[in-house]
Length: 225
Image (cartoon, rainbow, N blue to C red):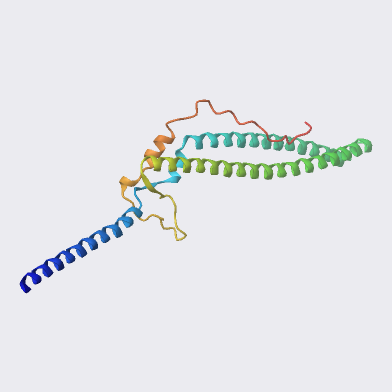
């Protein structure tokens, strides 16, 4: 009887130990599973934003518009400088007439009067020219910075969509440099560089319409010719 009791107790204890081990294994699996789910899924890619920006077809279009405006500005400046040269020659001739003692006093006095008037006109035109240069240089710079930011934002939006579509968790810009002129990305495997693929997709769909010629909104320098 005592022997049977011992056997039953031994079996009960063995079953209890087995149940504890099974429960511990299940607890371990439950504890590990959430950790696995918190890991970020997806690949890592690199892109040279400087190359993408410079070779994007919209960048070339906008830069061409700005160049056309710069040409218009230079044309107006050259026209004003040409007019100023003519006025200075006329003034010089009048000054020579005013100083010529062989000419009658009335003609000399009229020449001095006209010379003084031309001097005022030359100073006014030269002042307007300098103001025009400053205003237009600042306007062109502001326009360029605005266009640049718009294009960069457009590229960033495309990269977000591209990343989601191709299961990329992170896309790193490799064009940047640190304050110590060290590349921010020291090394990347060549196969992670998606610059060519991104450019190919960005430039695949070009604008259907020919870019409109930039309207010349620059003010005239010469109110009177």
